[in-house]
Amino acid sequence: MRLLILGGTEFVGRAVSDEALTRGWEVTLFNRGRLDSPPGVTALRGDRTEAGGLAELGHGTWDIVLDTWTGAPSAVRDSARLLSGRAAHYVYVSSRSVYEFPAPAGLPEEGPVVDADPDDDSPDDYARAKRGGELAALDAFGERALLARAGLVLGPRENVGRLPWWLARIARGGPVLAPGPRDLALQYIDARDLAAWALDAAERGIGGAFNAVGPSGAATIGDLLEACVDATGSDAELRWTEPERILAAGIAPWTELPVWAPPGDLYRALHQGDVSRALAAGLRVRPVAETVADTWSWMRQLGGPPPLREGRSPVGLDPERETRILREARILRA
Image (cartoon, helix red, strand yellow):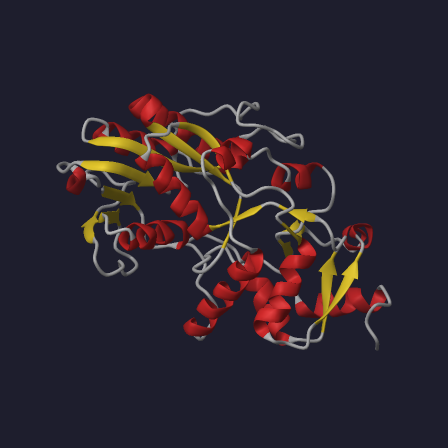
């Protein structure tokens, strides 16, 4: 198989590159060249936001194109139109953020989505940008377009900082503010499982929209944080704290306590989507302990804080604030 990845050097894109190379596929990457490409690929250079930036894509044919773009939809429009006659299938890595908020629990792919325009030049609204990218892919490829609506993505090379923050925090040891309830079900996918499924589905000629994330409850927040303790070998003590106390302290779910959201609208949107269509199409999710251990191993190899994606702000709770909240809640011994 001949695969063209628009991106291919960071997180999900790199996971796709690695998976395709493992399969013995011919892999071409098109990106700005800011980061090193994995060995064994053909590297094309260009900036999708600049006039003439797609010049190096002006020739060549591929079986599959995979696009991880998160910016303005017009960039997806231009790439998809350029490649529609020279590629058999187009995979656009989208997001479950395209659904109107609040999304009810169990929302399938037919649920209402945000209004968007494939000609939009603005990347400012993430949900509209991703939906606009979907429309651009569909306009150029029709039934040959696969829309992989990812949810919470974890794993090695994560450049958002959610799981790396928890691992770094727990590795420091001591009492840890653990957001409850401990049995709160999570919905996530390892980037490597997302990559494998997307390539499998595209190779089989599958098109349409899929909620490309694991089933809700494959792991709980307790499973995740306890796996962090095990992986790091730290003396961290998880101090489980009820959601009401956390919210009363003014802590922001998802950003200050990454991955976690309290029961309610945000939780239903993030962790309770219907993924039966993707599971029926072969999606498989590895155990959370494996994802956590492999991410910790990658972090240790780096020897420093993992780099964040360009334009991303750091996540996580300030240590002094965490200590103060634990003490006020009387779950931290003075």
